[in-house]
Every structure is written in C-alpha cells, then in structure tokens.
Image (tube, rainbow, N blue to C red; front, top):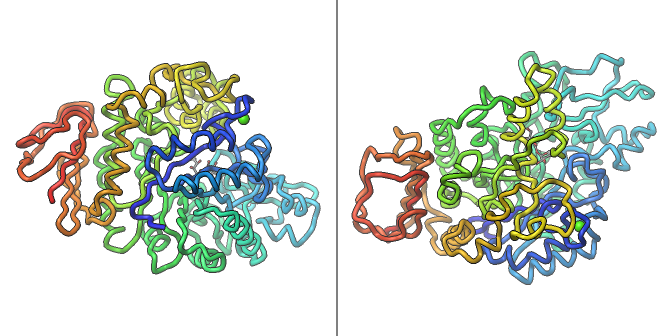
Length: 545
Ligand code: TEU
Ligand code: CA
C-alpha cells in the first residue's frame, strides 16, 4: 500500500450501473465497468455500503454487516468484484458504519425486547416522555433522542431515528465490530472507510448544549483515539488504507488520527473547505463562496499536516455533497474549464485524491423542480423544516437545488441513450437532461474532455515524486481567487496556478516561464515566456527539473 502515490475512486452503487434492469445500480454493474475505472489509473475503489439494510439512509443504516442487500447482489458478486478488481491492480475498500446500526439490526431488536446485554450495546437513558435526556439535535433535523414507552427509556440517534448510536464504551461492542473487519479482511478487502468515526466516543456525562446542537460533547470525544488504536492493532489493518470520515473535527485531532506514529488511520476526510459557501455555518442558508477562507483553510491544513506528519484526503465531491462544478465552478458557460480547474486545485496537493463517480465527467447538480423528485431522508426532512420556518415552497426548493445530497446521487451518465446508459428501466432517482452531452461515451471520443484531463492528473501523481512527497507553499496570499502553490522535492519543482473565479485576473506578480516546462493546462498546453493574466477558471501546471 502506498497511500502517497494512490488515487481512490468512490462509487455509490445505487447510482453507478444497473446490470439487471430494475432501475437500481448493483454490484454486477460495478464489475461491468471495471475496465472504465481502471482506465482512470486509480488504485482503489471505495464503495459506499451495500449491506443488508432497510435503506432509510441508502445503506448507512446497516442491519447486518456480513450480508449483502439482495437489491445490490450476493456475496458471490462481492467476491467476484474483489477478484476482478485485483486482476486489474485495484483494491476494494468498504465502508464501515460503526457509529450506529439500523434499528432493524438484531442487536437493537434484542435490546428492544429488553435483553440487558444488548441494551448495553446502545445508549439508552431512563426518562419520562416529553423530557429527552439532553437538548441535542439530530444531524438530519429534530431531536437526537427517541422514547421507547414500554422500556421507559430514551435512545440516542445522532442521525435518523432508525440509526441508533452504538455504545463504544462497552468492550463487547468493540469486539463485535473488530470481527466485522476481520470478516471482510479475510475476503480480500484492501482498505476501509469509517463513517463518522470521530463521533464514536460519547462523554461520561450527558448534558444540555446551551449554544449548539450538542456536537461539542461528542465530536472527537474523550476516548476516540484510544478506540481507534485498539481497533487498528487488534484487527491488523495498520498497513492497509484506512480513511476516517470526521464530522466537525479539528486540525489537531486529524493530525493525531493520521500521523503514522499514532497507528490510528491512514488519513481523514474533513469538511471545513466545503462550508465556505454556508451562511454563518448554516448549510440551509445560501451564500456565495468565500475564496479567501477557502484558500486559508487549504493552506493551514496542508502546511500543518506536512509539518506534523499527518496526511490529508483530498476531495471536493462525495455522495453527500452537491456537485463541485455547479458549486464552485460554472456548469454552463465555463463548464469544461471550471471542472478541470477544480480538479487541478486538489489533485496536485499533498494527500490522497478521491474522485467521486461522475466527477471525472463534470457531472452537475440535479436541478429538480419538485419535492417529489427527491429521495434523500435529509433533504425531505429539511424541506419540511424550511417550510415550517416560514420559507416559501420556491425558496425551499431553491435551497435544496443547491444543497441536497441527491445532487450527487443522480445516475452515472454513461452515454446519450435512454436512461443515460445507466439502466434499461426508469431509474430510482431522476436523471438530469444534460446527460445528452455530459456522458462518458462522448468524453471518451474527445481528447480535450474532462475525463481525459482527470486521467492526466492521476498519471502526474504516479510520474513525479514531487506530487507524492514534495513540500507545499501557497502563493499569492493577497489574491483570494488565485489558488496557487509550489511544491518542491529534491530537484523537482512544481508550480500550480488556478483562477477560482469566472473573471480574468491580473497576477500581482507576473511569473517568468523561463526554465519551466508546461505539464498541463485547461487553456494553453505549450510553453510561454511568462504569465501575467489568468483567464476565467484557468489552470496552469508547470514543472522545473
Ligand atoms: O455522513 C456524515 C455527515 O454528517 C454528513 O456528511 C451529513 O450527511 C450531511 O452533511 C449533513 O448535513 C455520513 C455518510 O457519508 C452519510 O451518507 C450518512 O447519511 C451519515 O454519515 C450517517 O451514517
Ligand atoms: Ca439492479
């Protein structure tokens, strides 16, 4: 495993490829597309959950960690996927949702039946109806506690009411989860992504949050590092690729999670850079992007991680985020330029880049016009909350069009044929009309496409040690829209200049092209004497050796 030279491709199976024509993507669909994935040059495939589940949260509500949901396929299909990916030099990473289980999980069902052993697997608190133990709020909206009248107890759910939080204080719970890892390791899985893993350690005392939703008490909680060290050591995954999804985390904690000396995880996802277009930190209030904040965040995380030996996961997109080209780019006039520019920004930084299915095609937000088109539990819940807070239907829909998780869950656009080549049947979620021109087949033909550009970026990481190991220095501090950095490793120097904005930008200090070779660009691909102006969303990648 070499995490420094690796690139990871993320798949949301429900929306990737439907092999049996029921309108839902499945594991055999992934197998069919392995050559395509390999053609990107990636090393690992991370699939979001396909385990047995009532699918209230599309599989993040796990009912059995060792069974495959029949909609997605069978255990034999997964084994074949592991094998065929391996034949193509790619490892499969699975998504371990260990902060909570579905309330349909056998453990929770036994707890509900009053079995003390299993009640201790979860976080139950005695109480009266109408008086939850704390005022904490669920991340999907509404209270984080649910009352079970006949037990006279409340249980904690930081997410949907059907996702009950596990009690990691209980060593029996930790053993159960280690066995899940061992099970998948034996099947030949090569890495793991751990869902909201910095939320697993809850405080000793549960108290009201006077000024927030409670996250201050359980994010990066008291025993989280201890638990991760134990999990990694006891399952022997220390030399596999592991990534923790960290919710409302801090740089200090992420350095500890990812510093190899700590033996916790290979790297972390954090979301600070994906909140620069939230108004006062609120996802459900629209605001334009704050480029200054964006640049400062990247600079701080990159330089601190480098100095203190942490490792970043580099990403713009996943199954919870709106599409980056619609969000920070321009999905109309400068669609191609801005998609390439955004990719350039992160792929040449210090860390491990992730490509989320369709990102490599510049897939855009869903553009749904009616609430009936949404499928996501969070979107549907927040639509109601927004309407109750006094927004009009049109205002609420406008917010969902920008912020809904369904923006990233539309079917993968394979070709311009019926249902975008995703399925033979009406898919479970609507396809944006732009699949006629945004699709894999069209971009395969066009050597100037976003798809080909991503392949080049991935290849650069493999080709040059400076991309893997170089130091990072951010440039043009005063110019917020210029996302530029220099990377140095032994005799190699890489210069990356990006214009985040849709306007021409005059560089405060011109760059001389002398001695530089042009490696890549979304406007010019040839050597120039110097550079004073960046065109709208322009990217320039230069190298000196
Ligand atoms: O997401 C964790 C999380 O807190 C956010 O990504 C959240 O979905 C959203 O941003 C809230 O506004 C992880 C999974 O990636 C997500 O799909 C699951 O729904 C969630 O955990 C619960 O398992
Ligand atoms: Ca199917």
